[in-house]
Image 1 (tube, rainbow, N blue to C red):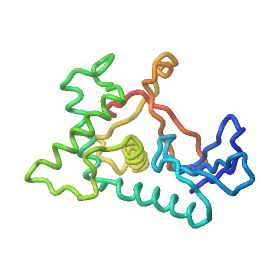
Image 2: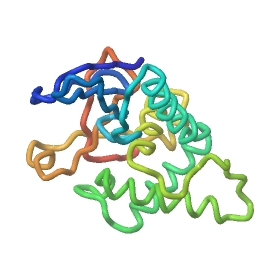
Image 3: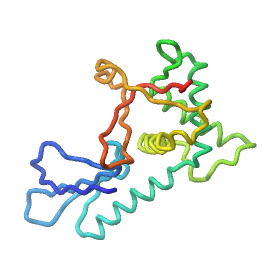
Image 4: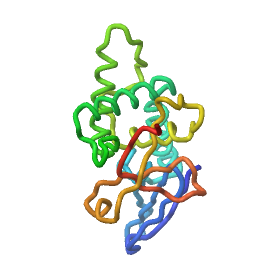
Amino acid sequence: MVAIAVEPLIVERLRQHGNLAVFLIGDRRAQVDAEARCLYNREVVVPWRRINSVDDLKAVLNAAWDLLEKSKMEPKFLEQVLWNAYRKSLQGSQGTLDNQRIPIHDFYREVRLEIVRQTLSPKKNVSKKIVNDLPLWAFLFNLDLYRSRGNEIDQSKRLIFETGSQREHSQGMAMTFHGLHATEDYREFCFVKSIR
């Protein structure tokens, strides 16, 4: 689902809904000038671009959809990358409490490294669509896809995501999830851990 909001520049806060939010910001002049950008989980997928026609808006939307599609990892590959990254993070003792919870930002860094490892491995057949420099929006998009698979994931390697305390959120430890479903609110998670 795509949400399109048209707002004048004087609006203080923009609204966003769904997994892809587009904002049209008109300038204060009488001309028909506007800008649009596309976001996923509040992360910029397509930066601000000038919009002068419906075709311009369609081009921005199509660019965002194309980027999201290209960033989508095969489910089994994604499961393996996430599990391997989680295990490597545990070995690096970056975890907290019982050393099973990994801060989500550390996990993101390790996922990026694991994709590089998978790409460089001569035995692995990695899709050409996977980008070594995994942008945050692509990471969040793939995690939302992973989470949406629920019980389809091997229970011995299933990861879950936990919210943190208010203090941890205020320190910027959280990432925004849940952008696949426009009817549900975003959720913020600080940690990842194994379900077992």
